[in-house]
Image (cartoon, rainbow, N blue to C red; front, side, top):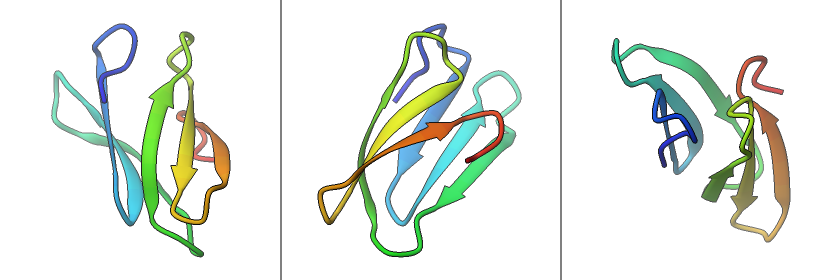
Length: 67
């Protein structure tokens, strides 16, 4: 999923990985120990994502800190 300004790309499965589109560098990786991640949506500020888990929880992830 592309960030609102198209500078970052996020993908999720066992973990959430965020890449810098220009450099191809991984800028953040987040692992949810309990369940696979099933969906993600960027907030308009590009610094946060809502992420859905296989067990139905929704997490708010800061893309700068990974928390």
